[in-house]
Amino acid sequence: MPTVSPKRWWALAVLATAQFMVIMDTSIIGVALPEMQKDLGFSQGDLQWVFNAYVIAFGGLLLLGGRLSDLLGARRVFTVGWTVLIGGSIVAAAAQTAWVEVAGRAVQGVGGALIAPAAMTLLMTLFAHDPKELGKAMALYGAAAPAGGTAGVFLGGVFTEWLSWPWVFIIYIPIGAATLAATKLLPAVAPRRGAIDVLGAAAVTAGLALAVFAVVRAPEIGWGATQTVLELVGAAALLALFFVLQKTMRRPLMPLGIWRVPRLGSANLAMALLGAAWIPMWYFLNLYLQQVLGYGAFASGAALLPMTVLLMVFMTAITARLLARLGAKPLIGGGLLVLAAGLLWLSAVEPSGSFVVDVLPASLVAALGMSLAYIPAMMAAMSGAPAEQAGLASGIVNTTYQIGSALGLAALTALATSQGAGRLGDLPALTDGFSAAFTAAAAIAAVGGLITLLVMRTEKDVAAASAEQPSALGEKAEV
Image (cartoon, rainbow, N blue to C red; front, side):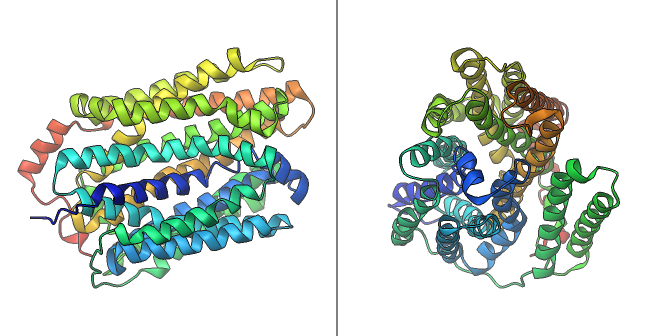
């Protein structure tokens, strides 16, 4: 019988705050990007590296973070992760050049990659005793992610408008220190014996980074250019090496047998496409508000606050109930289709548009879709994994979301730039580029929704399969 911690809800507050801050780190810089571009000398195309440097490090190292969490103890890894995140925040805040800023963002991503899977392992440890409490805790924890992402846009506006852009990083220092002080509320999860697949972690991180770099650079040097082709081939080779290592090593970073867990594959695909549609949406929506409609940093952040409110209310009060009643499949598929509808609405933005007509209703529809899909996809991906691999399962699902975000943003930035988004001051051209990005993001979300509805198994199907095959992982899942 699992030990029930009397402080588990206070501990959940610490974990949810960590999730909020880690995901907010991917978005708080959004509103500050134009000011950072002026001060640090970023080009319009290279500006996305302020975002992607974090996401590549975060997504590429999440599997390693999950493995370390399982082997070294989740609370210890959680603490180290926050220490690294604080260090990266100091570097990013003090940066005077573009490359230092990108480096600081990458260090922040390393910290996030340690924090996120460790937090999920701690959450599962705290609430594994009661499925109902676990569902409620997951709803609150899950709501912290998209809420942090959207709240970051608002807070970034506040800091940029009233202070200066370095404050979007400085804020992590006192909050990180307070979180470290509160780690005594978290349970001490015993470490386990095992090896760390450093080579596998290096291969997957380098492969993902090279793929994003190739996609970002392709519009400038050409998709058919020798350099682009070599970069994409190199990325594919590194990722292939990763999977070969996982198949042949005795103690791999990601035992391939874990993919036998029911719905892990389909849920992760849904999360990847969700990230590839959602993150580019807020990125280009920020640029549309500031570069086309002429909003200041604070006004731009405030304009997206209704999305935050809808996400928080819907995910904490409604989504969990719908999940218990309807199951994950219809919510994930339906949520992605609703997100697609909101994005398609946003694609109708005009150079002389307005917030009330062009942004508010469409952004609320998109946020509704996100709030329907995110928690069910997370739950579906993790529900079949055994407790000893909770960190690994969390690392996988977070990796797919973050890498989907990075690749989606890189691809849609390339598309938007080719359609005119790089012509600062040319409002019709900028709008055409942003509209093309919204349209492509809508297509990504729609494909994700349709695939989910066609492929994902229901809870009844999973239960029936589990009765016939009790061990989902099999011998290859040994860790």
